Image (cartoon, rainbow over all chains, first blue to last red; front, side, top):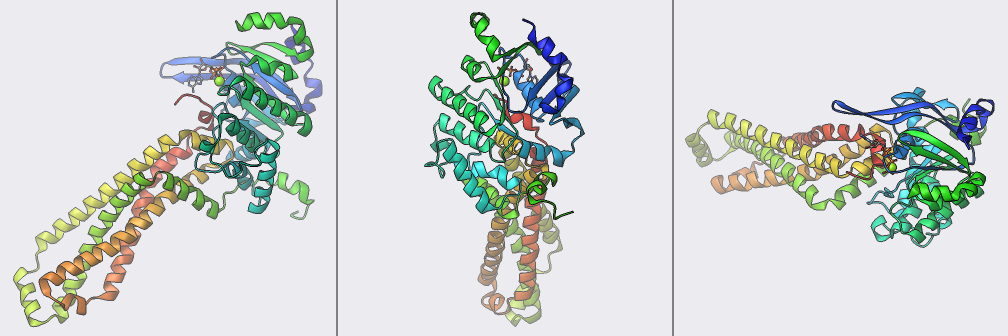
Length: 258
Length: 220
Ligand SMILES: Nc1ncnc2c1ncn2[C@@H]1O[C@H](COP(=O)(O)OP(=O)(O)OP(=O)(O)O)[C@@H](O)[C@H]1O
Ligand SMILES: [Mg+2]
């Protein structure tokens, strides 16, 4: 099935639905005389409320794509639209605002600020967004309770396990009620069981809060919670599958991952 | 225009801010977690400013003694003579020590920036503007400058007073030129803070220019 072709073709009619859309995105890394084309023209769209997994082998360009969608890096060529706004047109303030309010990021390495408690980590984006301290604290406690850390609000990151740190990171990503949560290998540094819990947490958030989730991974457990899977290989999207198509060629996936 | 429906106002007004109190809190903690290194930087500022202050104090006290000192003290001063050569030498030494001070601050700050690469990138992903990052680093340096300079001013002044009392008896204390010395103290304090800020500018700028995408990278 070459579903990705048709998906791209009939997109223009329903553009208002797309929270993320990329057109011909290329990214070339220049290292001295060497140049490496990590993305070779990516066209994709994500609809509001979807749970998307970006799958692909190491070095295929997942993180690079991710930085493009997250407005963390600029494409060498092509356009990224978030909520149908061309990210390249934004000035520094608008870009910061976008990162602060519209997108929540989750990293493989958790990336909590070590000198701050769990609660302070979660409230920092709210402070940036201009929320009053009291309000931020109330909301932060609520969010930490939501991710199951209501008892550990005052702990520093180093006093928490990996899974707990990632929960704090999930809470932080939700701080300003973002429309999109981006997660780059959120389970990469976690054991199987803890990884599963984080994935399920993301899925719940996706369903209950209608947050769009885009997650890069090579963790096959991610597959059965995703609405759609984008397969990336060597800087290109090679396959675009909806979950209901997935069951049919599950054997094939297992084979590919080997 | 400002009294639109409150719910949408938040989203149309694209404001990102970091209140000063919060910035102070964050930078203070970053210093505390690197206590020993901060202490070394503070030590550098302390000695540089103490040296500067002791020389300024010495000049003020000398002047006071020439004007109002007892005959014996004046005779002693006469004996030493107004030594022009050693004065320029001292200026050189002070300048040099202050320069070393700035280099020390810059070096320590650069180390701190490198160490906190991911932390800075993460903050930028959370929506921090470049100027927040600059603010945090400059504040950190300002704290160090403040503590070091206040200590240096007190130390330099006391040291010179006591050292002059050992040569000239009670006169330096009795004739202590409070106003002059206070003024020198303020200058030295200003110099210390200024140096701390100058030393932090380049590292802070470097930190602020860090691409947020680097926070994602697992290596480094
Ligand atoms: N900052 C960079 N400078 C130079 N080359 C880079 C940089 N970031 C990524 N690359 C290169 O771009 C290609 C894609 O890297 P990317 O990190 O996007 O892969 P990935 O799919 O996320 O891999 P992994 O699963 O290991 O995280 C790789 O060949 C990598 O070496
Ligand atoms: Mg990656």
